[in-house]
Image 1 (spheres, one colour):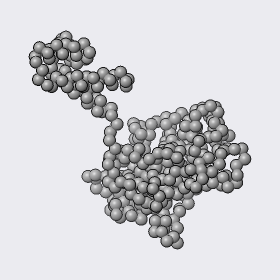
Image 2 (cartoon, helix red, strand yellow):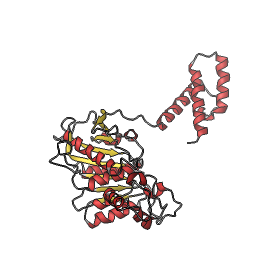
Image 3 (tube, helix red, strand yellow):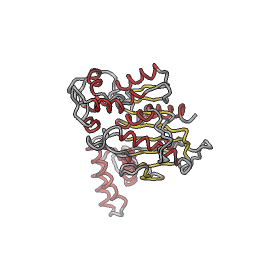
Image 4 (cartoon, helix red, strand yellow):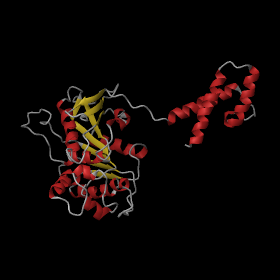
Length: 356
């Protein structure tokens, strides 16, 4: 929608609001003639005369269209900024479905979302839980620590996020959650987190003094959206092309710039952080959703890091590995996962792999 059209609509709303006031009849008639020239569509019966009633009706119609185009306000969390760890960013928001009783005696199934931002930016507030709440799911959107290239490196954000799952399991009775029905999702960096938790061996430590860390990190299904599945920069460049530095966050994630000869410690950190390295035959069903085109590999070196790191080729390669291990999965690209057929695909996947 053009800026000119929006400005016209705003002008219309302001101008026609004056009609509701008691202007003198002659003045009102003169104004209606002026407004007819500016907004001919307001003359609904096309008789060449704009009446007060037609003007008010047209104003109301335009205002409704404007309101429909505005981004809806975020649903207020049932529990906001719940602390799951000691760090400032160790917080999550939790929504419980309103006026929807759990269909299970064990509580609400749970949909947990991790935001993107290259592990250096982003916030839990950017996620809209509405479609999932309408299905009767409890929803969590979580923050995690950012990497800085020095004190905080990968896989710290993944470990923080795994703790979210453990914390929710420990306190599931408090919020009437089903600890055996948990789905993970995320976009971009949140894809790495989602897949890393989903494919990693269970992080539960039965000997820990921390009751949170004694809980399982295993979940029932995964819905990663537009993100990398392998963080090895040499593999990415050799198989996908694109800029040789891959992404500006990589030095902050792994503690050093990307070069031809990486230190062994960095190589191990990259391998540990790459979800595809943790895949095994007992891993949960995975729906891989990408919004881009699969074509174009290898990418030119001039390609943007955003195009490279979100390319559906990552999903194609992971699918091949999942297929080889007979792990249930589906791979979709070209559809927007936030709406329309892309959102329907996610909701149908949850019906099949979480809600049954």
